[in-house]
Amino acid sequence: GHLADLARVVLIDEDAGIQGVPKVFVENQRGGLLATEYLISRGHTRVAHIGGPAGVFSARERAEGYRSALAARGLEFRPELVQSGLYTE
Image (tube, rainbow, N blue to C red; front, side, top):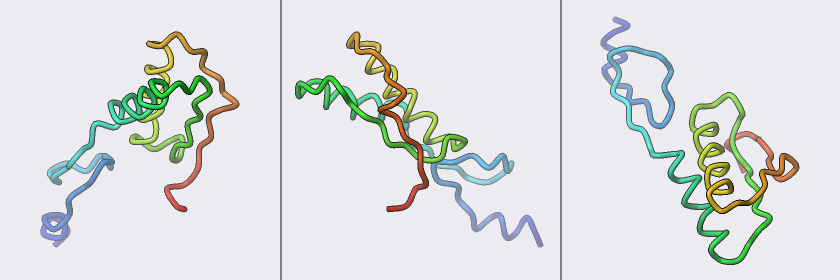
């Protein structure tokens, strides 16, 4: 049945709102923050963020980390340096 099929599913890094399904999440916000901090520490002051689809949980979390890193270093958030796209090449 339907529940038996769900027993073979594990959600990775996205929450589809399905109860009783194992989920594995990454620290997306921290990843966005660390990546941005690394670039800033290398002397870059105009750091762009190319993220996934705007409505996707992981993409939103990564963008939050990006913005947090800019704010922590006193750099202005510049919307023209932010692009969203699909998780494809």
